[in-house]
Length: 167
Image (cartoon, rainbow, N blue to C red; front, side, top):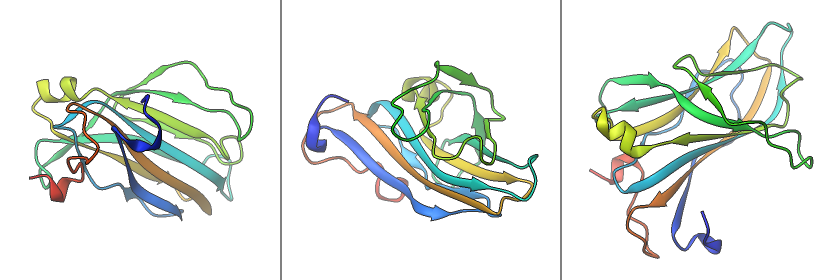
């Protein structure tokens, strides 16, 4: 991710900023066929709940085909501190159960999730997506998700990474 103005890195908004409380929300699949590296940037705003035991769980799923059977995968991530703090936590590995965020404690944080397309391809996966699930029931969860792809073939007009356009 070195080129400003998105000349070579493909940045794809996959979930527009919205309140997803009480709703399991999946991004569309991103086609990783033409990516050297891939990241999902998951940006949270307010996360609230009536109880302190509720959680917002972030998982990543992979599939061999856009409409195929998905499987939860392990991934690496970093969590940013509060807005304006410019702090990032250590690189952490999440297993297939994902990352759990708490109401109030994890307000206004960002997760940078790294996906290795070659590792997925070795397991016959070509597509990846983010899944956000309330456990059991948030009252507010503001979030937006972006896929950031380092193109395998550098060019100023991107090969589409959205699953439906990249058959």
